Length: 334
Image (cartoon, rainbow, N blue to C red; front, side):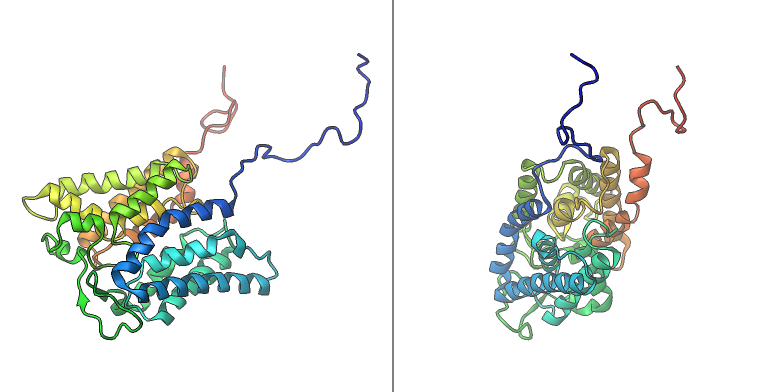
């Protein structure tokens, strides 16, 4: 064959990397997350009443509208169809007590999208989880309302004015006591708490679904839960009952929701395996530390947000060595 033969124009296409594309899109991933969150959300609505449904709808609608309007005003591509704003709104609602005024829930969703997400450039550019940042904002701004809970099956229909206040299972743990509910009730979600956090069983099932669908990997949730388990076993808050203490720590608060759905956020978690493991360990250690010594009974939100700020350093520390380069970045010696 003549080596000078020319290929027809357009036969060879040259483009910048990456050259391998998967079938997954942002919309398809967000759809999988919504499916995984549905059982725990439905259970929260069943346990706490239609007011929980209103909170979910308000948060999701506010998040979607805020994102769409801001992108129009800033002349950016409107991305509400990718489902990320809907997921943010749902995750925020799941972290809220059913008694929270709806306007405050809407304010939290606006903060999550406008300040934490869009202010930094939109999807893929925020450095912390928007839903958790929205919850942290509400915790600081409306502490009393964010710590006002109802008992399970004390259903709130429209107004939260007449509901009976009840402590979450984390409150007795703070005092070194076992929660009044049985461990079975804690696992299934027959206790008071936030709308979507009460059923550890359904959140665990949703997390396993995401693992099987390969939406997330095991590194962060396993490292997170294993760290909480180990520290709770070594330093149990319930004297003389280490196993019960561990079970109570795992099944209460937002641990399952945080480990599977918040800490694994693509944008705000490390991309390397080593970074993911250290990230999960850090989240677990900080959660236990805040629960034990902090002013709030729960530490999941603040633990993940703190670790979000360290993701760049973790990715840098665990970045793979470039082929042909030494540890210092120079050429390797033969």
